[in-house]
Image (cartoon, rainbow, N blue to C red):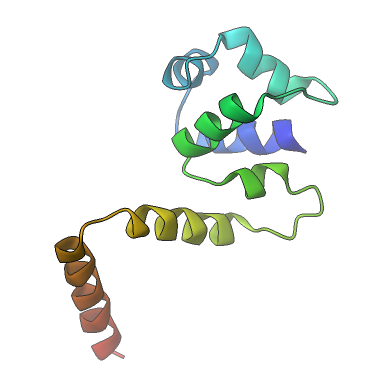
Length: 104
């Protein structure tokens, strides 16, 4: 389950095993093992980096019951990023969303 999710997201982003390994300070063999060994033995730190580089959340990657969808993970990731933004940027984003909502 974890390996399938990592592989799918990695391929959707057009990343090779080497590229994801480089982005996450991991080895190619480590990423391969996560994708192919059952059960995988990820470190929390490495898995957090992988989730970040794949634009998802740890919750999505680790959810074995498939209660967290990719869309839920993307929304959670966006909100976490949003919370780190400065006030002026948040204001601009809220204004853009309001404009989009006015079209309906």
